[in-house]
Length: 236
Image 1: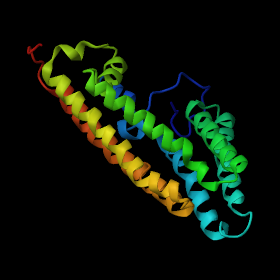
Image 2 (image 1 turned 60 degrees about the vertical axis):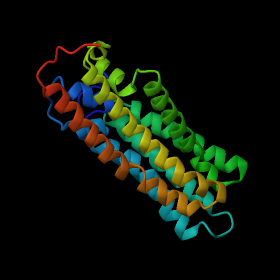
Image 3 (image 1 turned 120 degrees about the horizontal axis):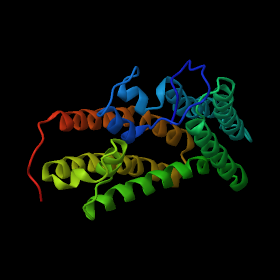
Image 4 (image 1 turned 90 degrees about the vertical axis):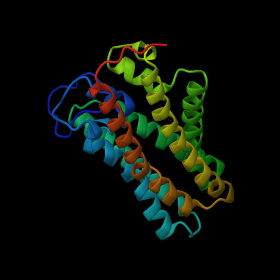
């Protein structure tokens, strides 16, 4: 969902990120490392980290003064808008930047109109809960989402389900992602309920990209290894 940094050609079709990018990478090669591409490139990383970092720094410095939490929120929205504008100027794919800007904007609106700074994080909590639930249900019904995403990214559909080993591997990868979403909720929800805004902001950053990268890397290694194996004739 993002172009390479420095792309100056007219915008092209959106590239996949996350598991879809890892699945596609196992079927082809490119100039950008699969893990970097899966994170949306260097610019995608900045889009993910900078708005939250600005909020944390500004809130920590000024948030305990009357009315000042809103400065942190406004500046984080401005940062997200700046990344979107930069992509427009560079004629790059806008999907990831716009999604990030809309999320940051709605989060800010929720915090401002409810007069509760901690509501700046409520969408993130619901997003993790939604993704975690979806990934878990997919395992319980025997259609692990990791397999579905990778299968369609490789244009193989659900062919992987004919191989018991592939099903087990994709189940394990899916559960790894369930664990990531669950850990975020276990740590962040109590801070949200307690109204610990600064601690919540710091925790969100710590459990954001620093947690996402190892999960993504493990998924990539497992998926790459799976498709480098000799074809198996074992079927269900």
